[in-house]
Image 1 (tube, rainbow, N blue to C red):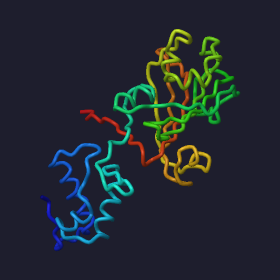
Image 2 (cartoon, rainbow, N blue to C red; image 1 turned 60 degrees about the vertical axis):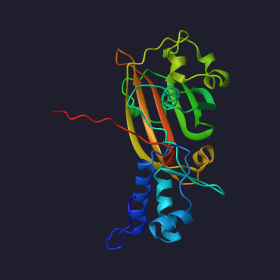
Image 3 (cartoon, rainbow, N blue to C red; image 1 turned 90 degrees about the vertical axis):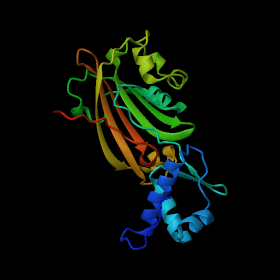
Length: 248
């Protein structure tokens, strides 16, 4: 068992955090497995309740531990993560073992996206605008706002209803037989932000909470941009992972 060394300059709660992570790994604990109680941790590592709570708070914030009121602390399920593939939210979440859901917030025609300057080569408007709340296992994860040029939709704007949008992934709809788009590649940019009051209400987070904003432009094989989506994730519920390779 990893021990706590009071001679080190490293704060005790940081040492305890590492010790608990080692405990989880060494015992092969899985999502949902219970961790020792605060009393057991105090006895095993010789630290105060305050130190224990500081360590557990950090582990919760980092997504390793889940605390359940009245039940204790448990190994958390891994956070949903980005995949470096041009896949839909539904495909991405299902591949990680989650149950994705979509709730249509708004569907209408608009003249142009709010930032057309970032879309060189995008066809002329009008655009089909779709706003969706994306959920995982019933928990709000992100708000997705999508703009699609009407001229690329084969005249099937009638498909963008709650019944259709909530029943399947958007990419399944766009690339299905009714519309027939082919999406070959996408370009994403990522930045940090803070939730507006409306976003906080939809995501069920505190006002001004940290968010992760992902902008995606998707292209056909002929390099025609046909989709612009802005996804606003609750930052403490989602991880953005990028697979890097050495150019040499």
